Image 1 (cartoon, one colour):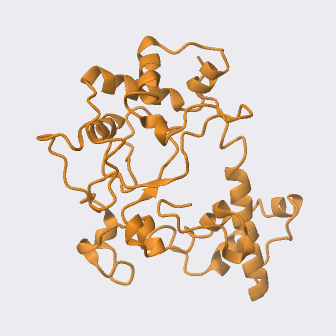
Image 2: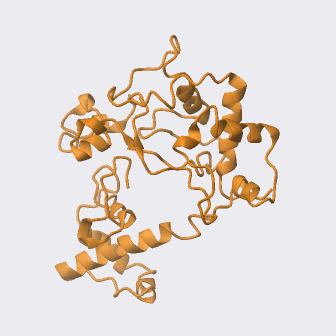
Image 3: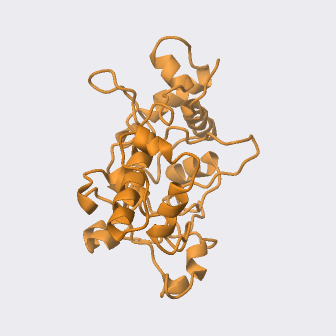
Amino acid sequence: MFWDGRTTGEAEGLNDPVAEQAMGPFLNPMEQNVPQMKLVVSRVAKSDYAHLFEEAGFPAPAFKRKDEVKTTYINIAIAISAYEHSEEVNPFSSKYDAYLAGHVELSDQEAWGLELFEGKAMCSACHISEPGPNGEPPLFTDFTYDNLGTPRNPDNPFYSAPPSVNPDGAMWVDLGLGAFLDDPGEYGKVKVPTLRNVDKRPYPGFVKAYMHNGVFKSLEEVVSFYNTRDVDGAGWPEAEAPVNVNKDELGDLGLNAEEEAALVAFMKTLSDGYTG
C-alpha cells in the first residue's frame, strides 16, 4: 500500500497491508499530526461509537496502560481495514458494472473509448478491465509499479516541509518504490492505481488532482500526457525520475483528439453510484 509500496502488511504481525497503511496517517506530521498513538486511542475510547468495538469482537478501547494502547491502536487499524474492504466502500455500482451485467448499453463514444482502452491506447495492459476468472468485478489495476515519466509538481507542499520532515527541501526527488527498496532499478516507480471512481467528485466543479504527486488536474490532461509525452514539441516537462521510464506502453500513442475524448468518456463510466 501507499504509492511507494512501503506498507507490506508485515508490521505487528498483521499480514494486512491495508491495516498497516491505516496506522500511518494519524501520526504522520504531514497528515493528521497526532503526536502519539495514546491520544488517538483516548479519543476513540471516549467517543460515542466506542461500544461498537466490543460489538465487533474487539476488547473495549483502553488507553491507561502501554500494552492497552498498542493493542487498541492496532485494532483501530484492523477495523478501518475491514471497512475499506466492505461493500459500502466497494459497491461496484458504476455504469460499466451495469454494462458488464447486461443491464445497460454504453454510448457510442463510451464504447469506442472502451475499445481504445483495451486496444490502441493499451490502458488495459496495467488497468485490467475484464472480470476475474470467477466473474469478480474488474479492479482496473494489476497491482504492479511503473515509472510513467511524471513531471515533478512544483506546488507539492512537501518541498516546503520543515527540515525535520524533508531535509532536502526543494531538491527532494521522489524515487517512489526505488527509495523504499533502496534499489536503483526501481527508481521512479509507483503503484498502478485503480481507475475505479477516477472521475468521481463531490460536486461537478470540484478539481481533482491526478498522478501520485497531483501534478495534473483533469483526466483530459492525463490522457494527453499518456498520448504525447514523447512527441517532439508537445512541451511536457522532463520526468522527475528519468530512469526506468516506461517507453513501451505510453508516450507516443498516436491518438487524435476525438480518441482522447472517447477514452475520457469511458473512464467516466467507472464512477460508483450510477442510477441510469
